[in-house]
Length: 250
Ligand code: SF4
Ligand code: SF4
Ligand code: SF4
Image 1 (cartoon, rainbow, N blue to C red):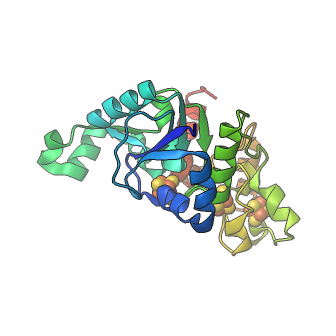
Image 2: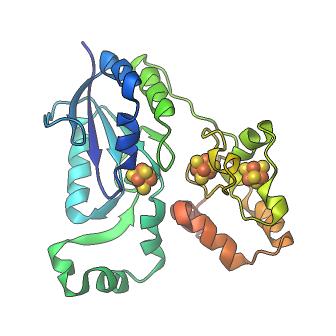
């Protein structure tokens, strides 16, 4: 019996689900090991008897809170996919403003029709068993994690920073050119794809474990960046961790 899996989306661009569909030929590998019973972007079936739930997107309304709690109750394993679900991504920025002002700005006098709440990543609402980071996720990493989970193992993703992958490729460091690259404190696993293509890392895979933000800030100050600019860059994807850090929670 193949385990039944379901995909659900919340506040997101749905790019991570698209990344799964983009597996193309390897999609057969996926359907060979699991039975997909709910995946709005791919099938019309709306099965409710799943064991594994993949969650994309962040929580931004009361009814989404109820929905994710219901999914959590059903799923034996709940795995978040992508930065929106794992860290809150840029939607989390609303947490740095007065929420009444945010509501007024976004909805005007229509907020009552949408029951909005401060945007949260999934693990701030329900327990999450595993996170697959990235914006979007890496489709091959997704497939690898699914295979590991089905085999009963504990999925592993890199716990070292993007710089390691970047250095191994011999890329010229963008920091040396004065460009604010978050590679030193961001979790690897993407092959430093942005830096390889002359774009800085904006931290989409979340902060690497045991990152040293203070010493990294020293480096950034030494090349001319000010505290406000540094923190703004961090907050784009990792606002939740920065907020925890500022409140002494991490
Ligand atoms: S993590 Fe990025 S690609 Fe995935 S749903 Fe969110 S915005 Fe889209
Ligand atoms: S370009 Fe970015 S990721 Fe690459 S080595 Fe420099 S800081 Fe690290
Ligand atoms: S280099 Fe940084 S921003 Fe680009 S994919 Fe990797 S973690 Fe994400």
